[in-house]
Length: 285
Image 1 (cartoon, rainbow, N blue to C red):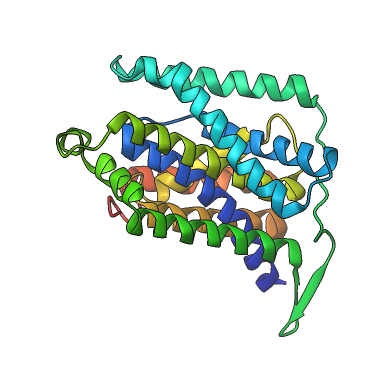
Image 2: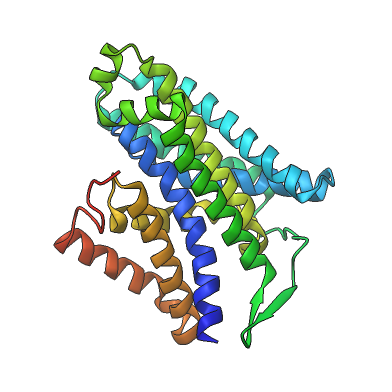
């Protein structure tokens, strides 16, 4: 049973990691903590529900479209909200992210209603037995897709011109501009990437937690915790932090009680902030 809980915890943790990666890449590119990142998860889940349940699109096609459409929403938000505040005090931009968070949540409530909506996965209820342990196919699918997305993200950052340009902007915006990199364009692309990561996370987790206007709030809290535990500026650390939180979350809920989940997670977060504020990996890329 413990093995099964560990695996399903890694599956949930991969969702925290994807969401946290969106937070970290924007923080590295703009020094901006985007409190609205969790709402991209909610948007991706609602879009996925509409595509799969409403339009009856294949699961794989709907996943790609959900990622793309959430990324396009991120462009619109960046152009209308964050870009006009680019040269304003940082506190103004932070307040704007909170306003976007509230706006998207209210829109989710308006269009989706107050009740959680079921999102049927083609793998729902199916399981595989391996070495005496039964694993849910849904957990395998979530973990496999999330790991693939994170792997492709690393390839993108290390092997493509745009990815390398993003890394340059993340390290030093002024020097990157001097070298001829179009910083505003790269920041826009970073928003698209962050939105797409949130959309992917929302689509993948929707069959597990149902779709609701408040789902982004819960996941974003854990994503911020993952980023803090792994290291705010560390992409590998963020991935590890999300996986760790997912395992702890699942073990606590199933072996103790779900009432203690938040207590344990945020106690660990406070300990890291007090004694290891740079996180597990520090500022390593």
